[in-house]
Image 1 (tube, rainbow, N blue to C red):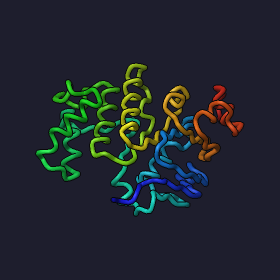
Image 2: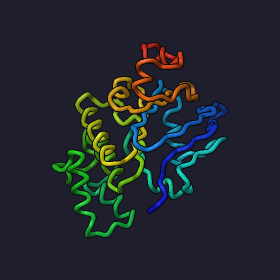
Image 3: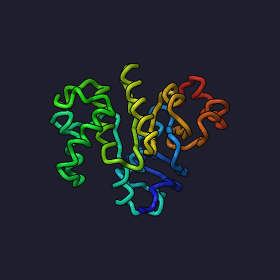
Image 4: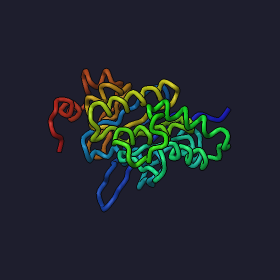
Length: 239
């Protein structure tokens, strides 16, 4: 049995770009079995933290550790979906099949896996449609289905419903819940308080590159420990 990917341990993580500290000394530990929501205002450093954890950026200082795995192995057992999904100029089905081909899945196994992935995302009727002609919500569900098809241990989602309407947001959130229920750890960013209420089991609250609070969601929303978190929850603009 392969060693587990979790816990994710981050120590004194700093990321500097253009002479500015985007993240400043962030430390945290995440375990399996809970939907983790990284919450905070725009510009807090949420997306950068997610990209660092996925190995897309190199830290300026500090370290990131997934279980006892080396970085390449750890990354191979994760998938990440960006705020604006990047889809291939192919059909909906071909976008998912391409991932399976790259992963070395035998041709005979690909079709049933593609069919199951599209059905799970509510996209089966659109299988032959060019992916880039889908609506915004459909594109995001396709990106998530594509990320899910290889059965990652962890799925990282960066503002997965930004700019989507309520119906599209609801469909994406239902898909996220289904993926988590099937055993994949969810770590996602949002600045949407309503979404955090609906999806979070635990909350990491970031502001100006610093992790100010890490609490169970019920505790965070009932009585945040950090004054800036309390102001954010009250609707105040943080500067």
